[in-house]
Length: 269
Picture 1 (cartoon, one colour):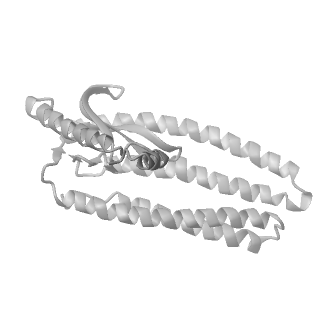
Picture 2: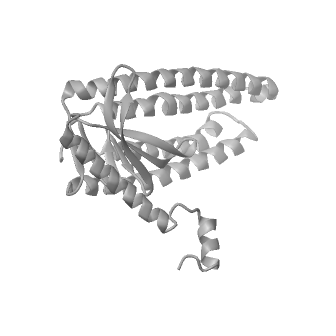
């Protein structure tokens, strides 16, 4: 599996780009023009972007190391390789559906930026109205990056060869993405991608998204619907579910305050 490219490296680069943008937001507007009190907001948002970018860079660097360790040892893991046409048919339709959703989201956000920029322009003093265009341009750049560039990069990752899925009890490499979890539910099911029904190993776990922590389901496509692959998928689903049940019995699904409360009452013993 040495030919699998590490998907976390792109995330690491994006985090560094965010940090650089933060530095630009802090220093560039004030150098271009005298923006007065608005410099405070530029500095404030720039510091947030810089700190967030550096924080994510460290996180993705550590995740990159975990991924390298994950694919270096395939013992006990489910490894599926695909026929090109079969895999591309499955992923291609999913990507087309997601792209339509992203395009709709993009146009809605662009309309919102235009309205906000116009409001800021008319509400600002005449000598500071140019800041509205700087603000609108910054939002436009953020929308392009987070709605078009980054999602398209993820979709591109799903089409990078070799076409392979690797699933372990707490980690997986599915459609070009690295997944890891503590609590997850797994099962076999039929998945309709819009044109054809495929047999998949569905893994549902909680992960961080732009909207906060959310449960999302990721589908590992079975290369063939024969008894051997079905039994292997069922065995891995059982391992994932048993691992989750073990963590739940230890209280891993409780939040920080619940664990502190249990400790105070001696329930953690």
